[in-house]
Amino acid sequence: MQTLNVLVVDDEFGMRSGIERALRTFSVDFNEFNESVRYCVKTVDNGDDALNILQLSETDILILDHQLPDITGLEILDFIKKENVNVLTIMITAFASLEVAISATRNGAFDFLAKPFTPDDLKTRIKNASERIFLQRKAEKLEKEKNAVRFQFISVLGHELKAPLSAIEGYMFLMQKKTAGENMTNYQSMIDRSIIRLDGMRKMISDLLDLTRIESGNKRREMVEFNFDELLEYCVENVQVDATKRNIDLNVTCPGNFKIKADRDELQMVINNLLTNSVKYNKDGGKVDFSVYGDEYHFVMKCVDTGIGMTEGEQKKLFQEFSRVKNSKTRDITGSGLGLSILKKIITNYQGNVKVDSEKDNGTTFTIKLKRFNDE
Amino acid sequence: MKKKTILMVDDDMDLRGQMKFFLESSGYEVLEAGGESEAIEYINKNNYDLAVIDLMMENQDSGFVLSHKIKKLDNSKPVIIVTGVTKETGIHFGIKTLEERSWIKADEFIQKDLRFEQLKGAIDKLIGD
Image 1 (cartoon, rainbow over the protein chains, first blue to last red):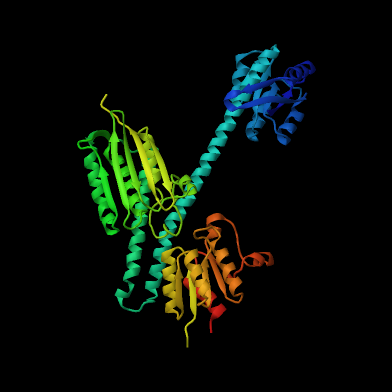
Image 2: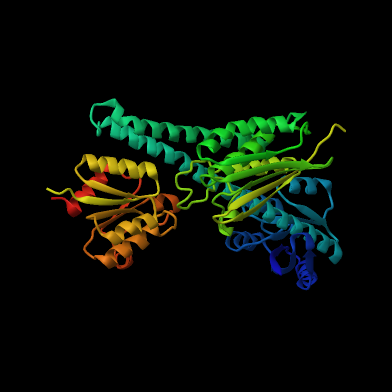
């Protein structure tokens, strides 16, 4: 149960006590916010006291008479605006004139009540104001969360981009100081490592651009029909070199002439991510089974590897941006930490889902189910 | 004269290799370990004169754990902990106060990004001739 603070400013005693009586036992349930609310009412009879309370204590709803002995209601609205006081004002006016209502609303009043009004009129206005307050709070909370996520992302991005730069800077320093003598060939390994780190950095930036393009919706999706088995064959060829180097057996099963309608680039990213991960995080001499099957509504890609696998904790962080499994086995494996975030975003766009089964030291299975779009 | 040996423990293979290279060119011998388990093998053999340990490796506190092990075996063995923890988490560690020295078993605490000369300076101070 939440309590909202209501301040009643009116020079008529009857009005002040009437409002207080009406709200004393009043409460509202807001099921959509999962909140119930009751009201704590303070009353004052002049503008000076009202300004003091507004400045010094938290007021959520202000019920304000238009005519006060020392100041007008509009002047109080002015003060609220100038001082940036966070309060919703319901203006009471004896003259139900359009003029007062317009100027009050222009000056920031949320609503107005024309005298005479019934307790039910008052309660309806209070309920509306409370709903607005909860909506505002919810929006503020969402905005805060959004900012926190954004800052976290930028901070991790900064760190991830700085790491390769520091490494390259270190090599440059050693070369500048000629720590290995005058002979250029002595520096070959440093140059090789610098190129590897630059490559990793470029891959990360390119993944980052892909991710933002997909997330922002700026990337136009070109849905065309094509042979999935041909695309798969092309992707397998790309990863085959690394697999062969490490003696990893790569098996692919896909029906021939398997037509699907999708954005070819996006599906290529998904397949590449699955295949490269299953090779990168595999053991030498390991195995990868990539199979595709489907019916007229869906199709499934299943990638089973005999790799290093993941603990439950590692699996939980798998789709977080820049998250990389950090242990002695993954230490020297490079990656942007963005591949699976990209994969997840694309899959969501295809109304699909991804399932991960993994066992530490024994391997990982990714199962991706996508909707099969057709021409209708 | 026999060269002094540094045990260099860091999971960043670039930084580890660079420090090794720089220290070797400065007249030290360097043993490399890329993580806790490799480091423990060297620590048990006790065939080095000083250890330089990265704080966060497989575990967030790998460096603290290793330095405790070293000091337990030989309390006079100098240990330097290097870390980017402050930049990454905002948490400050050091060995300036008595309280910190009571649980951080290190002779020197250096923040990353460290300069190679800075590290060499700290090593020279602890085991230099």
